[in-house]
Length: 637
Image (cartoon, rainbow, N blue to C red):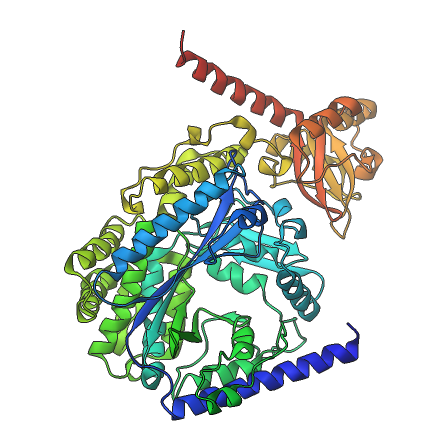
């Protein structure tokens, strides 16, 4: 496509978006959007994992066998999504959502088993590594390639990402595949068009406490970050902004918003069209005004396409269902997992709380500032149930106290107002109450399990054990507050722990520069008890390697009592043999044997990212032998 054609497509697409906005305004004025019945819907995103608990990029193959139109691809080949038809928000709808979720997941799991995969519900898959987040694992649908290219063009070829939590993650990426780390459980709540601003503002207020109780994504690339790291990761992974010399005000494509909605849903759509460029285009085949003139409901596909690339955490949506147009709020905050019953409980809490707040308060915007609500959202994502949340009329409470004493009673009343069955209200909101009482969210269970396993050297094994334990517990159907902590030996097959170098390499690497004194390298070896030190230049490129043997030989040659200061470059081995993070362990061992070396620096894009030594392999061998001996002792005679 040449540049002129591309601009024509952009112009015609934006013309179609503006036509859709004008048509939506006309529909609102003419009362063509239904106010009742109220409906609730869900979307389930999920991971595919193999027998070794690693990401299984078999989504396209499963989709090839699938006959259910509700199952759709996601960005990663190891992700899928199930979209459920909306249900009327009354009676036994929550129990029916749980039944449909279990049935659909089991049917999809049957298809996955034929391709050596399992279904796993997790906000972020613990065993994901950077080497798996490349374009080769991007789903083959053209729209994902187009989206990746559009975002890359806006922000540049290389994108830096930094998240601070207990640990700190700093990486540079060249695609949007980090977004594939995230899977969510999205809840759609239909609201009356004339009350959309009121309900939307209430949904914004309700989101933080619901999220605080639902966090399930504390680990990313083996780093302990936010309680719900998805929030930070999604915003950063698809950010199209570039740094500027002056702090220009610009909004990320993924965000919570900056102000209350005042007049109608059009406020949000207009603001987004004003602020953001279209990332994807489609040829419009519909004239919405012609449809309206013939008493047909327009699909507003151009507006929907544009809206699909602006990722508000509470996103407004227009749709047509059963021959009637409606507006709904799509809550995108909730993570996938830890179990189906936990997910439905989260949905019940959100929908009940929004309804209860709407029953009790005509206008929450006069009782709390938007800045406080946005701050609550960030606090909940970072800290979960440890967050301190501001509430109406200047009140400030810990998340557990606020949820137990104020919000769960309000959510129960909201669900009763919608006619939800009494037993179902108790079933799902009791899950939230018990989770809050014992403090064991999905994130809490993951972090406590991980900390209890100990040993950064065995992090690959520990992450596999967490993944395996998550699968086993969620398939039993029990909520996370009742889960026993994961044990290190739950990962099973040792190959899952040590398949690739990146799973166990040492990432806290001590380095020197060529002009540093040899004494410095010698002292670092003594203080940190290491036998090899990589040498980097001023641009952090690996240029050499210093071994304990080289330093020992240097001091022997100097002789007793001599203290001549010499630079590291005099004894370093230049241009050492290196491996990439994704190198298979057996290949790395073969290299060390062939080259008769005891250390391999791990390099990506000319930058040192880790190191492995013969001692690492001895430790792994000893651990594997211990596992096998233990298994033999408990096996048959």
